[in-house]
Length: 394
Image (cartoon, rainbow, N blue to C red):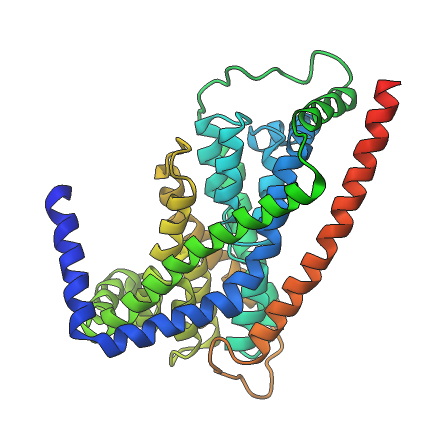
């Protein structure tokens, strides 16, 4: 089936591009603006920081030091703690990038990587708190409800997945039986440092280069799916998808007027969230739809995640299976939060465009602030490493 379906799909897309060149161009423009004004500045500092962490040896250090915490909670190695921190503070698809690196460095098994991916991939807090809450809903307080339900749902999945049988770990020494934990962690850290003879400037340059390359690949996905969304609207594909979703979700309590937003969010998260905020529905319904869209993340983000994990040996089956579970839990949690801690309504709820002037400005200021902090962190890390090496070698 696949050898036939793939070329037919490609031909269909090419014909649509040729038939509707103006719509394709407009979609590409929107995708470039989205990537340049929001995605790039929001993710660049975290991509650079993650590359520096991977190259510094700190991942190996925390892999040993935090294993007594991560193993009982999630049945994962200590190195997973840094992926969790990055996944919950940056956004899609930084967790996939770091997990692929953990696999290349042999710091986790394929089964552990699959479970870690299933609950560490989150929407960016900058996107939820700024773009959605302020730029789309016009109410900053709603961002806390959206983010809290999104993160809590993923953590719930992580705690539940620990009860699933995982293949036994092989080739990993347990840090509980030999030596002092902190001493072993430092020894591993210094060992990794001794293997990397690159100067600090070279390490930083490589981290920036790799981060920009990853973001360029992500930008290609963003632009491509922005074009597809425009074409799908014109070809009524979004409309028919919404009709199918209405038949499925209306019996579950979601009104039919919100299903077009869910249909758009099925493909692209940002477009879906924007349409949800502008739908003729109650605020709680909008929040429920947004929580579902953010948890699903859109086929655009799913393909980005698959691209970042290509060649790592990590299966996406569990990750894809957990997306509807994440969506259902996030919808449940935001309903509970809204009904028990009802947010203060602003005088006027602004259904503004998703990315007005304030949103890219805030995103780039945030990016600049984070990047300015990186040199200081590198200097401190280098100084500490030099001191430790001298103390150990004496």
